[in-house]
Each structure stands twice: as structure tokens, then as C-alpha cells.
Amino acid sequence: MHLPVRTDGDVPPDLNDRQWVERIRAGDIGAFETVFRTLAPPLCVFTRRFVGSAGVAEDIVQDLFLVLWRQHETLEVHGSLVNYLYTAARNRALNYLKHEQGTARVWDALSQDDPESPPTIDDLLVEEELTLAVQDAIARLPDRTRLVFVMSRQQGMAYQQIATALGISVKTVETQMGRALRLLRMRLRERFE
Image: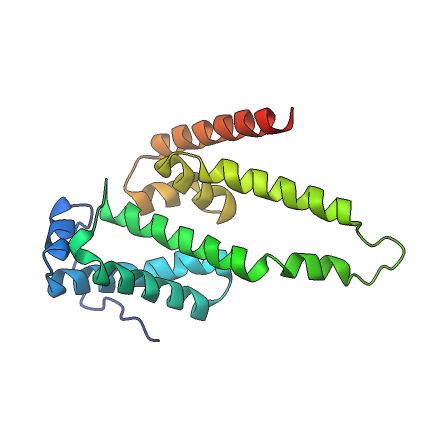
């Protein structure tokens, strides 16, 4: 699949404007195409950071937009369209990773070259429980807080990059990260105490 990239030199439209959601919901194919042309390339870059493959990232983004268009009449976006699409892309990438890597880690662990100390089933279960606990705690964060946390900690983006991508201030990014870390510590402490 080849995703179109904006090459017209125009300033991208303000996709945080609620009118874009309303136009798409009304079936305006031109509005949908503008959103696709503007956001698909950066969404592919964003998604590739999760999945590690440009082809898989493009498939995920293409599927996201396909579903968006198929369900355009019932589209519910609370907040900005940009945040909605980035969150949806992230969730799809994480679902892909869970599906693709769920059993791969176990097989990798079982096929280690060091026969002296293969992991026990208990080791694998403890590791899986910790992984699931962290994923669950991250998933339970408020949407904006979770998005900022994932962009920072899982994608390695700098606060300034996050602020620019989300159209918020660096101070807001710092506040959201502080909130995310407090909530994660609290939820993990509750689970394992």
C-alpha cells in the first residue's frame, strides 16, 4: 500500500477543529481524504515505533481509516480528532503486538542457548503477570495521560516533540507524565502488596 503524502506546500488544516468530525460524520469524502492525506503519514511513523515494521504500520493505519470511513455516520470523537486517531492507532498497534508477540516470548525463552538455566514455568508466569499488570495499569490511565506516557516512555519521544504532536504545552506534557507515574505507582503497589 502506498500512502499519499502532502506535497502541495499548503499549511495543513487545523484537524483539531470539531468541524472535521462533523463533515466526516455527514459523509463528506473530501474532508475524509484531507484528514487521511494529512494524518496517515505521521500516523504510520508513530505506529512503526510500536510494531517495528513500516509495512505493518501502514496496514494498521489503512485499516484504522477504513473502519473510520465505514463507521463515519456513528463517529464519536470526544476532544480532538488528531488525539482520537493517534490513540486508535496506538491501541491497534498494541493489539497487534499482543497477538503477534504473546506466544513468541515464551518460545524465545524456551529455546535459549543456555541449557544450564532455562526459565522455569514459574519464572515465565511471574514475568507474564508483571507484564500484564503494567499493561493493565497503563490501559487504565486517563486517555490524554496514557497517550503522553506511551509517546514518552514507549516511543522515546522528547517532551517538546510530544507537545508539538499533540498541540499542547511542554508544561502540560510534564504534568501529564507526573500524573501517569503517580497513578502507575499507586496501581502497581495496590496489586502487589
